[in-house]
Amino acid sequence: MQKIYFHNNKHISEKNDQKKTISVEQFNQNRKVDINKLLNRVRLEKKSETKKNILVYCLAVLVIGSFMILLKIF
Image 1: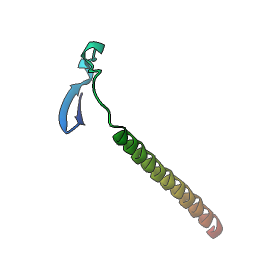
Image 2: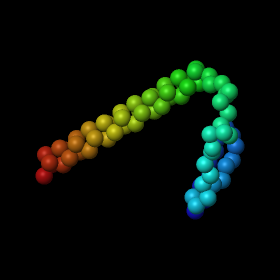
Image 3: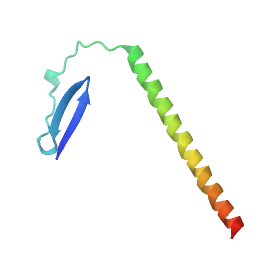
């Protein structure tokens, strides 16, 4: 089965049985990281997690409310 990944606007195809590992020597140690990009990514992930939690709580309240209404009718 083939998996397709998109990273930095590049298309990478990879098969499950032929996964390649990156050796330590090939990893570039001089690569610079922008801390603002990392912080923005963390903020976006936290915001999306909060939205998911709110959605789950609203659905739970809706289900419980619907169940209580059905109990009162019957």
